[in-house]
Amino acid sequence: MGFDPADDGNDGFGLVAVLVFMLIVSAVVVPFALTARTRLMIAGNEMEHERLSMVADGLVNVVASELFDDQAATKLPQNAEPARCHSGQFSYELTIQDHSGLIDLNAASDQLLTQGVASLGFAPQTAGEIAKAIVTFRGPPNAFAAGVQPQSSLGPRQNKFAAFESVSELQEFSALAAIPLRDLYGAFTVDLKQGSIALAKAPRRLRTIVTGTSPDGQQDGQQEGQQEGQPGGEDNGGTVYTVEVTARRDGSGIVGQAGLVVEKSPLMATGFRRVSSMPAAEIGAAEPTASAPTTACDRLFGGAVAQLLGQWS
Image (cartoon, rainbow, N blue to C red):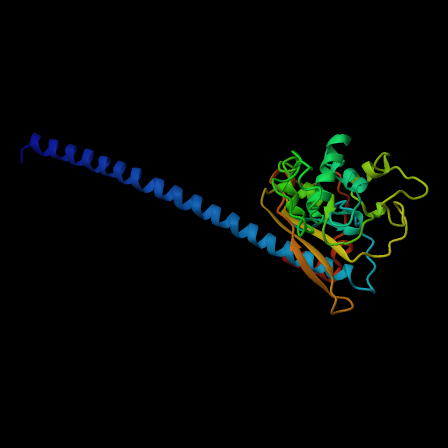
C-alpha cells in the first residue's frame, strides 16, 4: 500500500483543528472557573464575617447582663478603654462606656457642652459658639428673640426647639457634619438625663479637656459639671452603658463587630434592654488596638463563656 500525501495533510489539519478547539474551550471555561472560585471565596469571607458578627453580638449581651447583675461586680474599665483576649485562632476586643462619663446633650450646661465640643478638636471660641447653637437647637422657641437672633453659621439649617433624640442629630450642624459619628458618640449621650459628668468614667480625650490636665492627671476637689468621684474613685455602677465587641480571626482581615447602648430594665431587677445600636466602626478603626491590654477571656466574659469560645475555636 503506497503513501498518500493527502492523508498526511488531513491528519495535520485535524490536529490543528483540535488544538484550536481546545484553546477556544479554555478561553471560555477558564474565566468561568476563576469567577466561580472568586465568588466562592467572597461567599466564604461573608459567611465568616456574619459568623464573627453573631459571636460579637452574643458577647455584647453577655457583658450587658453582667453589668446589671447586682451580684456580679465587674472590674473592667468603663471609660471606653479597650481590653483584649485570645482564644484559639480568634481574638476579642471589648470596650465599655458608662454614660455617666459622657455629656448629655439635653441636660448639660453651656460650659460642659463647650468642653465636649472642644474634645473633638475645635478651638475654644468655636467650641463655645457650637455649644450655644446646641442649646438653641434643643431649647424652647423664643418668640421675642426669634426675629433678632441670626441663625448660627455653625449650627443646623433649622432649629428643632425640642430635645435631642439621638447623638446623630449633631451631624445636622454644619460645623459637626464632617465629624465621624463614632467620635460624637464618644463624647455625648442623650440617654443619661443628667447635667454632670463623672470624670472617673470619662473617655481619656474628654477627661483631658474637662480637667485641663494630662489624660492620667488627677485633681483634688470637684469641678463644675462633675459628679462625685475622681479617676480611680469608687464605682457605684451606672444605668446606661455602651458595650462594643470586635471578634476577629488572628492573621485575617475579616472581623465581626457589635455595639449596643443598653440600660437597666425598669421591669427586672437585674435585666437590661437595648436602647440603640452603635454605628459600625470604619475599616481603619477595626484594626486591633495596640495599647489594649491582653487578659484571659474568662475575665472579660466569664468562665462558662470562655470555655465555649475555646471549644468553638
